[in-house]
Image (cartoon, rainbow, N blue to C red; front, side, top):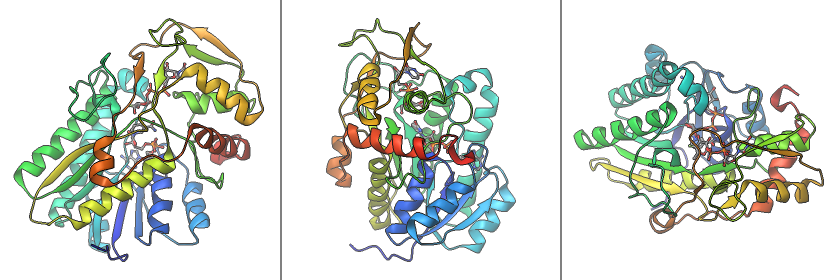
Length: 346
Ligand code: NAD
Ligand code: UFG
């Protein structure tokens, strides 16, 4: 069935790394976009760049998910068909030192969103979940039936929200896609939007890119004694453009679902391939032509040796597969980093 392109999609966290790429994909696909963001981890320039890339405008509301009155007004003002919900806090370490801030922002924020959606009979939601909801396991790849068991407060908030959404679907006809991301990297090929971590990056790729750009001196490699081919951690890196294409595929599925029938289903979004930390460093040096100094450090608490996806369900049910290879991920990441050495504050 064709989807009417006049559908309006609310994107919470639309100024953030993945949300801004989702806005580009939605606008290019012809959807109207309303963004809600409080800029707690993003910059308004990201939204200007989204409009520059697409040649289209979006509606922007600065505000916090926990502001129930503002949310209610937003749903009154716009005829929203579905929500893509990216707005959470996501730093694993910070979630361990300040768990209440994470439960409040992520879980309480989502409760407000769901309450307002329900009050306005908007019950289609795409939720940014994460491979972090899976219990650490030595058996790879992970499919959607793998046991759950998040190991830190950030992951717990994702697991709780998944559970809340399943409970909502058991009581009313919500249509929900739980998209479990593996390791999103890369940037839009324009080099205009990308990942802009505040302070010291927590994740591998932004750190590697900042060392290559001379913003940081040396990459800490957390452990080289794992049971992996070169001893360093192995992850399933996925291009952010592929990731947002998965969101569009899920959105199209939800928009064709009968509004009276509940639907709630998890989908892994990954490539099914694993690359080690040192493979990433070497590939980044090759792509950027820069050297990336690194130092082997002790293992990081909470890390698993290896993690990659079985993404066959998304292929079968969403007709989606990740298409971009590692070189494209790193070239786009490097273009963003070298064009914007200090991120949006450059
Ligand atoms: P991000 O921090 O760049 O984007 C999140 C956005 O939400 C930011 O713009 C922030 O300002 C906004 N925000 C946070 N709390 C808010 C609130 N209460 N009200 C309004 N706005 C709020 O993060 P991202 O990397 O784009 O991640 C997007 C989603 O994907 C998150 O839900 C994250 O947990 C999930 N995810 C990310 C990764 C990853 O490696 N980037 C992996 C798995 C899952
Ligand atoms: N790593 C380093 N040095 C760094 C950063 C990371 O060696 O400076 C290593 C880690 O030890 C790990 C690998 O690089 O072996 C990947 O680490 P990331 O922090 O980039 O990613 P994670 O797999 O730990 O976690 C990410 C997100 C989580 C999300 C998970 C699955 O941070 O929020 O992917 O989607 F849940």
